[in-house]
Image 1 (cartoon, rainbow, N blue to C red):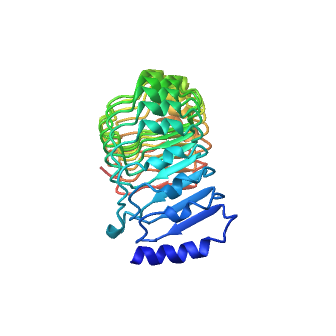
Image 2: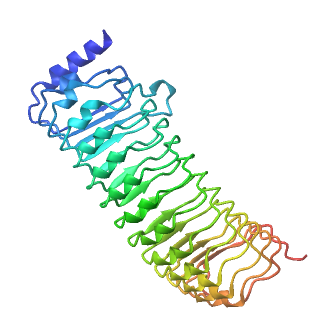
Image 3: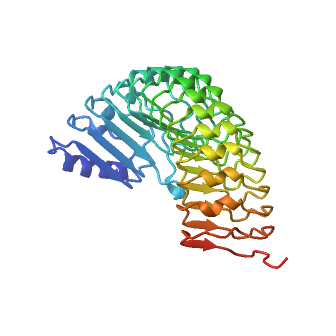
Length: 371
């Protein structure tokens, strides 16, 4: 009865909106179907936000042949609002003009159909939080216009199909929170337009494929929280356009390759929480564009390479919690761009060089000055 009353009111309101192009429905918690939309053929964008009871395919959507953007999301912080959508709605594969599809936190979707290959106009595809999806169909290779693919929090995914190599236009690949992802396919090397690769908290990922060196347009690589990652490939030096490398909390990581010197445009290097990192390679001296170096909580780090004095663009150096660091290189005081140096809880540090004339911020806490 509630659904009927809701849709009667909504349909009555919308029936004269013959030119409506954008519709957003928020917190219609009793809404179960969207059949009443079938006559609104001018619609180009629909957002269902916290409409958890939409749970089946609808002829209403299948008639909207001009629809370009469809988003269904649920506020999972509210336990009463878990999505009841059962399976991927078949009607969506009929929407040939669709360029943006986001089905977020749809926990009951177990698989994507091969027919998704029919959505050749897609540029954005997101299934964040769809925990039962364990792989992608090979047909995804047909999405030749896809620019953004987001699978954040898809904890069931263990691998990606080789068909991902067909996504020649892909610019952003977001796999953060894919806790069971074990490896990346070699086909990822074909994604030469990729600019952003996010693998944060892929806790079972042990290695990056050698083919990653072919991602010549990659600007940001995020492997933060990949607690099983043991190494960074030597050929990372080929990523000359890389601006940010976030590899914090990679607890198995003991070193970086000396070839890191090839990252001439790198501005941000985050190694925070890499507790088994013992030292930095001499090749770090080649990072002449580096502005921010974060080594906080690198509890095994004993020294910094002398070549750090070559980092003329460095303005922030974070060493908080480097308990075994016993000295700083003399040349570090010559870094004229350095404005922030953090040295909290560096209990083995005995002294710091003189000459930090450019420093505007210095944090020192619990330092054993007199031992």
